[in-house]
Image (cartoon, rainbow, N blue to C red; front, side):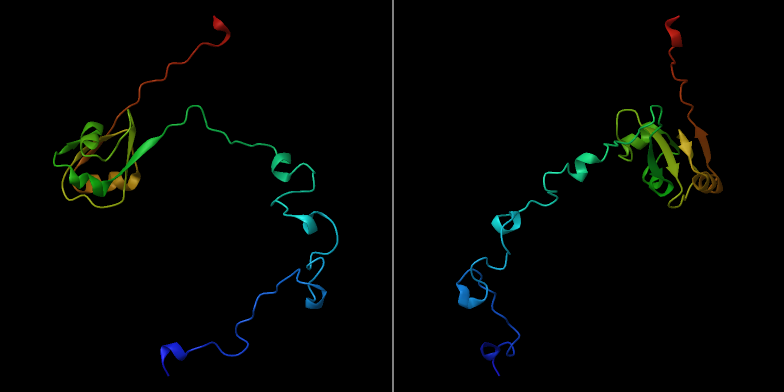
Length: 157
């Protein structure tokens, strides 16, 4: 048998139903759409509810909530600190190495990876596992304190 002699078994391929081709076909006149109504006459858009106010417009628009004093950190893993040659690592060194970006990001050191030498790490926050790995390698961790936020007096006095 050759590739050009291959063909599907009898009954495997069925020809499509051609609707609206006369009464003798069994799918003539209304072409299987029933009589009258929107579905018989044309296309009904998805999620159309017959003129009723659609569900997507009935449901209240809940847009969530962002806390006004949320603190966002840029994460740096302990394993990534090996890229930096200096023994003292702070936000400036992390930015030069391309590990953080942004105008003035706060940095959090996370515990993924291993430290192979003693490092002095300065960051705004450090996870417990990261602190343990750095100190286990003979290094130390310094937390950078954030300045107290300016608060406005209430009542205008």
